[in-house]
Length: 120
Image (cartoon, rainbow, N blue to C red):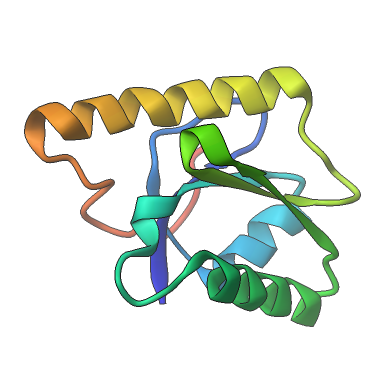
């Protein structure tokens, strides 16, 4: 399964595709992910997606936490040993709201292709 999402180091990046196993790797490197709930599509609901992300992270030895942002229809996923600051989360949410606004105007649904590597 591949989901659209935003993975950050110390700055916000443009949303791109991330699969479940890649999430654990990013979290292990101290990054965090924020997902728009509409990106789950018809195949997943939020509880089953969270269960799968947590299981993939656990296989990699990562303990994760989920913070649902209900007014924004977003969920933050982070490594409990490398939590983002309030400012970083605020910036991430603002960036995703920006891209969501672009989607409303031109049908944007996230990056069309999966990035093979991260650019820092």
